[in-house]
Length: 175
Image (cartoon, rainbow, N blue to C red; front, side, top):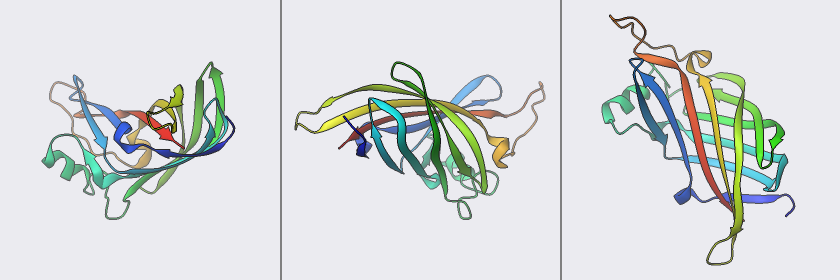
């Protein structure tokens, strides 16, 4: 296919996360607004240019009070740090259609290297004849590494909110 610029089909794409609450339940959420720059050959991501900017104000955990709390200085402090960004620095093939994508995550004024496992889900043409490609990505970040340390101890032991945040990305691209 060759390396070319791709656009995100936002109606078929999502950036979601899961975090453990009270050490027993998973709370899920999504970010509705994000931008992406992707220049790639979907058949071989090793030379791709990949960058994301996520609007943290677009967080949605299906609970307005919790979402508003997450936007405050206890967590994202979005008035000072409105975005989470990612820029790939190294892409290594780990199997057929599988890659480790390592890059710089910038969140809450901190930049750290993180790695996401990416799977090429396939390519084809949509009903209008436009070339499309699909990818999924998963990774885990520790929120404390970014200064997001708000928490509370539980009477039964443990903490209210886990440090680990699972990130799940589903992206459909078109030329």
